[in-house]
Image 1 (cartoon, protein in one colour):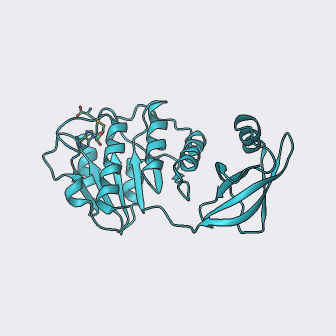
Image 2 (tube, helix red, strand yellow):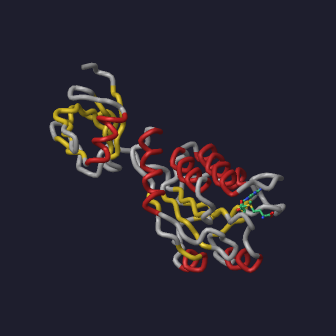
Length: 240
Ligand code: SAM
């Protein structure tokens, strides 16, 4: 037995010093058979609301594992109030968007079906699992929600009044995202599909008072590059 924390896990149970958590089969398998941890080994637990806690494997069987929570490691701190709205792209690349957006602190990931979106079906459960793994790895204290896909019309119709929408549009000689990204209020990025937004869609989007068109530079970026670059710019401008 050593004191070092050997893994970090997201759980849904309440966390407090002196409590305990029982893991389901998949997380038990990960600890026992992938990481080869045993009773006495320490792990970090977080649940998106109570902070991060050190826990020790107390009992482990083939299918389940009990962890005793010892002490708080970090108090909860919410992720920046930044949403990433993106047109789904093909398998492999969409997971990259979810993973990198989680690392870059996005609070909510919203797949948006636009006219030129090629991938109309989105496996939100699989993407949510990617978000959870990325959050475990990058030491976030929460996991971003992966919302069910919505059409662009529905997204705009329900858009919250107090949330700025940075619409990433290539080929526009518009202001840079960096020049308008500062501030701490709720905001979102909108990234189009591989074929870009249709001009009628851009007209619809820009009718929203909260929408601002922004450029990510002179080159045309792939959708996943655009999402990552835009989040990195926001993180840097908002210093979170
Ligand atoms: N087919 C489009 C074209 O050739 O003009 C390119 C679409 S691009 C692959 C996918 C999305 O990434 C765009 O809809 C936009 O949201 C974003 N994007 C790519 N490059 C960008 C840039 N330089 N500035 C702002 N947004 C960009």
